[in-house]
Length: 473
Image 1 (cartoon, rainbow, N blue to C red):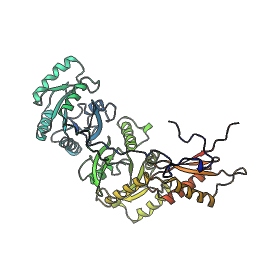
Image 2: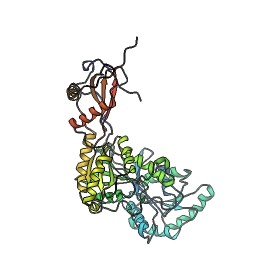
Image 3: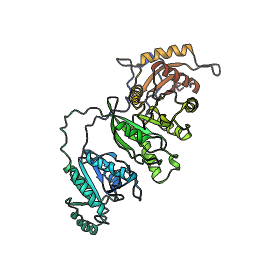
Image 4: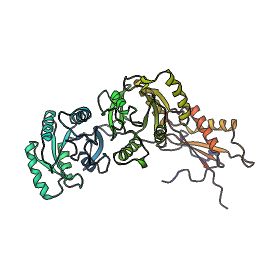
């Protein structure tokens, strides 16, 4: 992409067309989702029948975590999909089993919740195995839901297996659709049937309001991300277990916090660097990175009862480098005593000195303590993330600043700051046009003063320097 500021810098502000309102024309960052509600298609079935592979086939990319062992998917995970110009939401679920216990029971409950909120259900069966007792129990559950159900005979790799899949008529769900999720065989016919089963689309002139603001819940394993999601969503939206690493795929949910609806995304706990992870953990790390990139603001959870460690620092770096607004939630505050608070204050001063601008909230996902304070913190961080400073006001302030504290003299000369402009928002990016390079320390000084003057709490701010090019001789 061409840098709009690589051209020669004007001699002064008078040479720049600032437009009617005194602002340079610049992008506005992330646009809100103005799409209306899409039909929901839930993919269910017993463990290891290829549900996540089918989801990846339908959305056209390897998004859902897949591994050749049962139980990789544990929550219900939604993805955007499109077929023949019609968009819809497809929901991947964990393996459903009757009479499940412990974690398997929670996974099955998530699958049943996906069915209850779906417009169409895809019931996936392994055609190589045929119908089982678990499949027949699942059919009874689906009939109670009274939702349209399409029977998907997966792992049909050739014509012979396609003929054998007709035995699945015995399940009583009508025509089985033979597909190979791995190779794509039959997926087009299945998607055509899905579109026919969907409710009629809304008229094209139906107004589409801005969608909920997107919030990523990130942190290292077992800091309480899924517990906080369940607390905010007021339902058991994500599977919670004392064993670290329960969440694999990002789990999204709409939750009303402080009178406003938010789209919350619970992510996998980041245990290692992506380059050092392997298997499910590697793909979970990639999904977490993608969830941060897709979000507008991130809530980074830290375990207030334990010391801040390098792993927390890496996650914070990921969020700031992605340019997302930031709220720090110190979870498990119910476990913090007076001694721990004393040391935590010093850890914050020492370990988080790179991000003194982050908004901090002390919460307890277990007891619900202060979770209502997250909404004002999110709103403030997003407002500052999208803030634009008028060019005239910015340069009046900058002129006074450089006159009061000029750049240090280097080699008998000091570079001058000619003027500045805000290049974009989300996050705020500022460009200083100068007569020469500025010391890194002076740029940090300008950024710090910029934050103090215009209040950019909760958002990263980027300040870059564009030295004036010398005319060629």
